[in-house]
Length: 198
Image 1 (cartoon, rainbow, N blue to C red):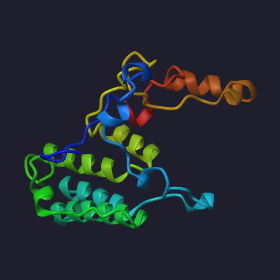
Image 2: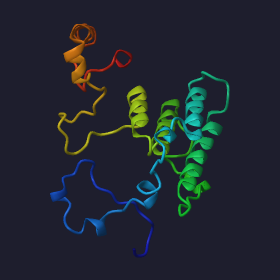
Image 3: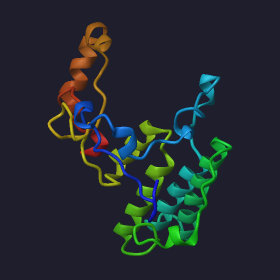
Image 4: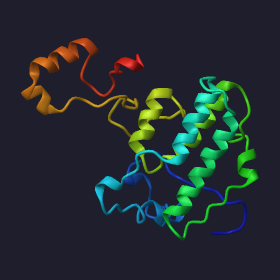
């Protein structure tokens, strides 16, 4: 509420409730109902597999890296447009407008070095994947982008996990193969990089 430029105000990831105070609802931005009401999936198989925006960002990255001979910026803008269209379609009360002003912001405009452009693709892809957190994590592990910081409060020595551990059942019921795998790839913990990430 109030006058001035619209701002988004959040809290540090992992902040303890006791540090937030009793007026937290009045001092930070709230998630709209789109993020918690409209995502009830009646049939489990109807979850998100790959969205149009994700595909466009994949093609933008491929074009920027020279893996395909197409216009990376066009795919990038189509990815952002697809993301906005998706969020507008999730909830009839959502009305997000994609403006030229948004696309021309320094952190969004498709300009700069290849590294900077790949960072912008990753950032917009991260935003587009809000409802698909696991895939966002996979993308971050693959590219290291966007640049993330560990949760302010964490139990992992200020590291973001880079893999899953093997289930306890594997240790108990398939111990020989489990031990062979651990010997080849390193300790079975959430900070041991997988083979393609080393």
